Amino acid sequence: MLHSILLTTTLAATASAACSRAFLTKATDAYVAAQSSGSPSGVTSFISASINYTENEKQANIQSGILSQPLKIDHNRSIHDTTACSTFTELIAASNPHPYVIGTRMLFSNSSKITTMESIVTQNGDWAFNATGYLYYDALESWAPIPESKRDSRAVIQAAGDAYFNRFANANITVPFGTPCARLEGGAYTGTNNMTGNTCSLGLPDSTVVTDRRYVLDETLGVVDMFLGFPGLDRSQGNASMPDSHMFRVEGGMIRYIHTAGCGMNGTGLPTRRAAGRPLLRKTPFVV
Ligand SMILES: *[C@@H]1O[C@H](CO)[C@@H](O)[C@H](O)[C@H]1NC(C)=O
Ligand SMILES: *[C@@H]1O[C@H](CO)[C@@H](O)[C@H](O)[C@H]1NC(C)=O
Ligand SMILES: *[C@@H]1O[C@H](CO)[C@@H](O)[C@H](O)[C@H]1NC(C)=O
Ligand SMILES: *[C@@H]1O[C@H](CO)[C@@H](O)[C@H](O)[C@H]1NC(C)=O
Ligand SMILES: *[C@@H]1O[C@H](CO)[C@@H](O)[C@H](O)[C@H]1NC(C)=O
Ligand SMILES: *[C@@H]1O[C@H](CO)[C@@H](O)[C@H](O)[C@H]1NC(C)=O
Ligand SMILES: *[C@@H]1O[C@H](CO)[C@@H](O)[C@H](O)[C@H]1NC(C)=O
Ligand SMILES: *[C@@H]1O[C@H](CO)[C@@H](O)[C@H](O)[C@H]1NC(C)=O
Figure 1 (cartoon, rainbow, N blue to C red):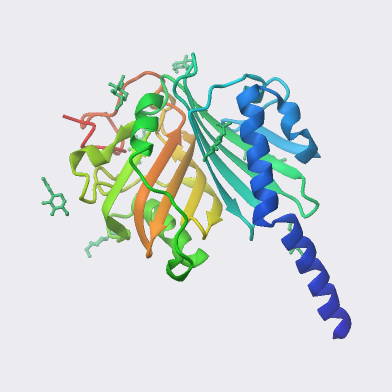
Figure 2: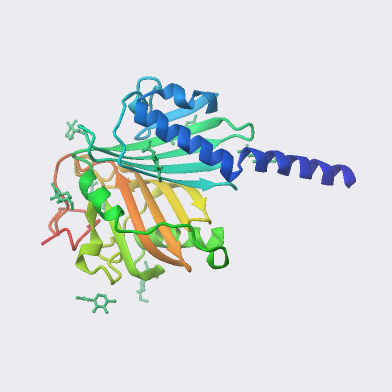
């Protein structure tokens, strides 16, 4: 009994040392700096020998991938999951000669090494892409830490994000949208319809099953990010699930902001009401 208590305490101490907020913040700072200077070596000390590194869900070489390109980063935001030992970082490079919006999820082992690093790298031609718009609307929002007495539990924050996607497959599900609530996708902002209203509920599908949800959760910021497979996002790929990230800011159990970065559309334009043969992913405000 004593032995097992001691063992548990030791492991807990190890885990919390590996996944302290300070450690995870050091890692995301190193990642942002590495992307800014285009030097993958900036994260080398964090990388496990057997790292699974992907870009848009395809195996990639970290030495020659996006991290090897110096990017002028106009905005970065990271969330830190001290329970699951993981992080998510949103990067907006709008004034870079080749604009990008990038979402990166990193998972750490107990020995402080990155075992999984996956980036969604979006650019011109991807879903509603407009890095200038992303930067502009993001700057209107507040993602400040939630005062300790008002923080939601992990379960409540995750449930809000899950309800959103469960609703995509079942119109009867009620999503805890706050008022106001706004969604920023690629660079298009539902909030332009009504900055004080709930515009997150506009244009939701009801028969789209998103697949493979992977969560990063930060109670301090009230944020859950989900990587997932989004069917039909690329109109040239039929109903195939495309790499996508949705980040939800939750306040008092209600969704306040949603940021998305998703691959696809392949320059085929935003969906219209007449997009043949499949559910509309977004209707208003993108469709006139
Ligand atoms: C590596 O990551 C990709 C993307 O998340 C995933 O599809 C794949 O299964 C992972 N591979 C391993 C060996 O974990
Ligand atoms: C990332 O954002 C922080 C502020 O949130 C800023 O201090 C830092 O300089 C940014 N890093 C880069 C490389 O732009
Ligand atoms: C860290 O160690 C704990 C205790 O053994 C274990 O439950 C947890 O899954 C480990 N986490 C990782 C990311 O390996
Ligand atoms: C991108 O967003 C900016 C800021 O909202 C806007 O001025 C610009 O017209 C948009 N560009 C395109 C191509 O939609
Ligand atoms: C939604 O509710 C309606 C009315 O109760 C019901 O007819 C329908 O089957 C429900 N749909 C689903 C997907 O549960
Ligand atoms: C905007 O939303 C607020 C809050 O729901 C509502 O009171 C107001 O009437 C809306 N304005 C317009 C122009 O729809
Ligand atoms: C766009 O779709 C076409 C037809 O499926 C394909 O041949 C092409 O490679 C795609 N382009 C990009 C940038 O994905
Ligand atoms: C996509 O799935 C819908 C059902 O959700 C189906 O009606 C449609 O035919 C499918 N389209 C393609 C191109 O597979």
